Length: 604
Image 1 (spheres, rainbow, N blue to C red):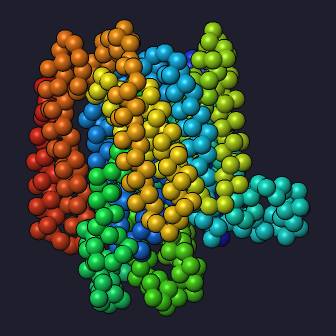
Image 2: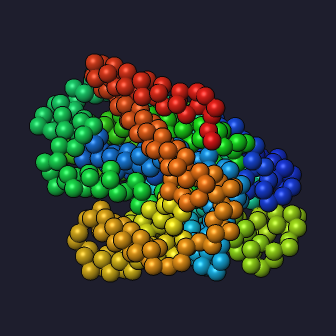
């Protein structure tokens, strides 16, 4: 249980989050643009930090702990590979999203394609992203927060045995995640999220995001310091790894898979770096990332904010979690998790639990409250983003587009606040009914893979039309419904590969056999977005040359990002020469990227 000092830090943060929504309610209530995209006035550092806070979910450190236990540091290539796609978002799409000045990324499809197919596509994507994806994501983070709160909060002690028995008798049986105790904690936190998100809109969300990032990152670093110190520093940790795992400590500490075991075959690694990064529903920065980009005060600020997101997401955030995960391997050895602590029995059954159990064992009073509050912040930053983002689709792409096109700002803001509450209710109901979040998530990722390449092509190829996206989504859904039930023993990465490739083939064939976008619609889009790539008409040669330059920038930025991430890792693991070489690479490639993109006239 928490001490009085722990409770002070926890309640202080919750009070701040609640107050932010109340104080920003008047500003958010001015208009729909104010409520969902903060009047498009944010600087790069603010929107980039908000993006990082959003992707820092409560489940992230737990998942990374599980990755390291299963395959060592190299298992993180599962998400490190996303850096390729996120840098593509930065270089190719961030500035263009801001130029479009749309409220949601789904609104974009009617501006890009026009006609009835685009209207159908807008409705389908709005429903899919607002209801299905949001509910699964929130269900995932609900489950993760349930794991985190379990070892610390016992409502039987807080309410008393009789009081908790009354609650248990009154509580509906269908409204439980894993246990009533954990469900009560998570729903109280979520209620606070709903209050400040509905009152303050995106302005309340992004203000709390700043504090959530500082608290989340600070808590992760603080925990890592205590964890590593408990082993006698980095050298003691490395010595412990060598003693406990004499035959495999080098492979555990390696940044690159050895491909010897079946856990991460070479083929799976290739899928990570060649397919997975683009086979995503946010392949071009769509979704909640685009919502943050829309808040930028200029296209250049949008790209800089996206770049800062990449640096913070991969270089800054990676290593505190990995170092803590390595400590859990020493404290709870894989072959004998109860060697030092009886709590290792829990960790042996679920390696992800090593993170919260280690918190409980080594963190002193006060520090435990801060670190727990940091994980609360991570949970809340993800939850507030998804209910606000989902509500933006319900209001802008259903209510305003089809039900009440002439609604005034006051009505739209009121409907937006109702939509946030509705999104929250739907998310809770879906989350409590999903027995296997992991299975549902993998299925939805495969379904979403059909959106990946078509969303990239729509920015760079004039021939792309609404049927490109629709056929990709339908094919991915069909293949997912066939492959996943009939081949349950096959790794999900292989199934994702075939779903993604099959969807690409079908979407390209459909594109070439359906009518192109009307010339007037295409001309209006080109004038508004000024795209690069393969376009017809005046300036087509210049657009192709610009695209080729962007590819060079993408490569420079991606290589610099990986060099920066590995340099920090090498220094932490006392590999100073390798760290110095990677640092030089980071500075050199980063310098050329920055000079070429921002050194002269800024972003086009």
